[in-house]
Length: 440
Image (cartoon, rainbow, N blue to C red; front, side, top):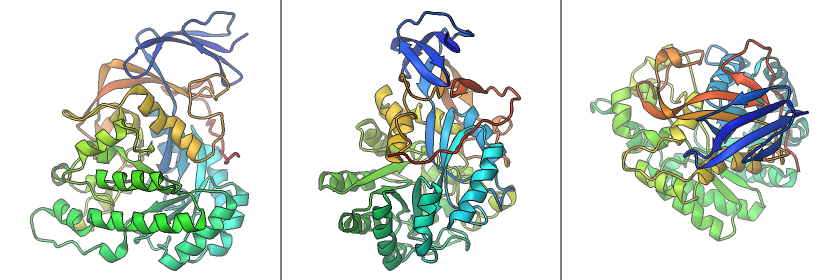
């Protein structure tokens, strides 16, 4: 007997194919045009689309240590409300940063007690923990993360080229991926205040050339060491084009962009203020080109880079405010809504970049990221006929701020399921998230 059968759903963001889903033991048992048989429970999803649960590989929940900024309870509620069923949490801005096995275990235990969604953990690569990479891999980190430019806090040091080279050699031997914040610090300037356009000053101080130079050198080091690399939060189509060329030349390199780069420009940041400050910055001319490259399959993953902070840190002047955008709750909706004049990706591309590709790149095994028999029954029922307007009251973040407030997105998330159990709308049941470890 099946645990649950979903009737009358469709697949794909455009509802092109009838879809019925049978779930047994927390996994998809059947996904086909018609499913029949005895079931403990049945659900009519007439008019709703069934989408794979989102795997967000770029999340900062900041707990332990900076729970006032976010936290696993509030952050995972926002994830569930946004259709995210699995996430990989970054090694900063928690205190301590995830730089050794002890800090990994502390964070994993805390997350398991609070998270509504499944989670993996990144480990850090810094100049001070080169001797801890092996123990982090043994503890279960999904991947490693490094910053070429300063991270924004003193708790997590950026690498220099020498420590990066040493770290990449070790990570290659450990069989993990290295994610890198790729801005060459030698090409970053200091923003000039007093121009009346602080967001434009911020962009000018962190030019696309800094990303391009960093990616080129990282690729050379990756090819020499055999270390797979993942370039996070790519902000401009020129960087995507460079990465595509490097792939053709045999470099094991992938890239991620984020919903804020797909939805917002520098002019938007001027209007929104510090809630739209991030690094790399929003670009004045990047948005249409990024959608073209997303639709053509040149962008591997889309992750939220959910990077919250307290309201106090966002209420400073733009150039002094914390740089980070809260966005995990809007990741799926923003990716399904191409702005006017931009190319809309196909259902297959969106299912890949949001679910299957991040699960594959970070070795979550053949059980995450697909709406297919044998995979964990993580999925979203999406109403394409509705519209979602982001309001402060709709946000589940600890600090309800976001650059997306006031934006309208196509459709709305009706229900989110993790391993066949509804996690949104919230049912009041205890947390069910599990730690995800990399699999061969």
